[in-house]
Image: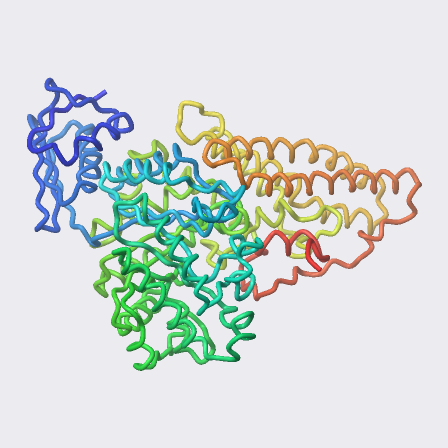
Length: 631
């Protein structure tokens, strides 16, 4: 353990220093190496050095001090004098973690996450909570969803504050509220199944309670009020009361009411920009580069920061145009990129790196002062959130340097995590398989669709036939094996989960294809072989479930895991049925297997998959051609 002696004013950083000391493996001691610290908020340049006898750190904020201390330690370990400088690119750089798609990070893991942020110099944190926070007036709000209590959020804000990180509440005040509005208490404030009823006084009583409660635990006077993708706005109960009105008028009426509430509580709101930006597009496309927002629309927008969310484009020109058009809306513009934790079961680092490098470079050119990375958990939160660390390191790299330097990023990542970037990048191979384009830019969720792919119906079998995916996953499993078994390292449990997934895929990926081929050829010996594999897979799928369960319970609250239990239970029982069907056919009890007599077609998606992808989508669409639930 390295001993250091801090010289200078420690009052602002002392509490946080106590928190980071253990993860930096240092002891603050009067007998340690002297390090003189100085805060200079007027300068964008930060410096840290060592002349062979004493160290220096000149920093711009509490949070940047912890980043520089961490980097100072990294350089000191090289046993040479050094003098380093870096330039702060953004006033705020942070993350938004999805806590609304079943995976609600527990308090201890969120603290761990905040420590990683501090080491990297990220200074803004949001927990995206549609209904996963406690509102005492509405006991069904977040019921059985792992909602955060006021005490938990206050504890997290205190922890973040000590590290110089601003925590900002991030909620919804228009759409994306299906789970909150499905109960009887919400009948009077529901427009459509997931959109609140604009113009109804009880709606604003409800929203004021949400805004007041959501902001109460936090020091920050800012709040993210959501308002994105409210596509059903004005089409339900609102239409029945008021007739047909244009969406802009409805949206503007509502936003003025919500902003009035935030002003009443001395809060500065920000919102996702898409519902306004779409008004300028003839097709309603959020990324329409020809969109022209009328001045009369712009003039009617209340004072609210606009958050442009874009984690899809790889070319800087697209970001330049979109940012320019957002700046023309005369509001402060904040940029939200993405670390692709929502691709499926595995993270997509290729898409993350290509979009982030372009997006943040454009933000620098266009004078954007605040950026954050979204970490969505679409369709059940299947991806462990700490798999986002490589993307977070990229945000740090882009936030403290004019230009991206891969070697520097990899060195800092190794120092911060004890892993090489290459080791984490092995996870990319779970989705970037044969048949998928380089960097998986069209976001194939190969490992997800193949895990849940039905062994008899095989909706994805035609897409993956002949690609040799079982052999591919066997190679991936071999690469992950040492990372999954080294208990001396921090993220062994994450790699153990993905190792187990690769093992399952090494047998399951081609299972349906081989069963169909054997059945069509009336090859009973081959079917016997696949029957043995099915029995094997029943056990290995349950082993995967248990590994996934362990990592979920370590990082998240237990609520939401029931959905994945149901999914694992579904594929487990489908293999039980497959075993029954194949056994009956092979012993002559069953004359034919109708499921295997059907000609297999390429997967039919609700949208165009694009080139270089083998499939993606929601669980409900990929497991059956029938109706999973509903009338």
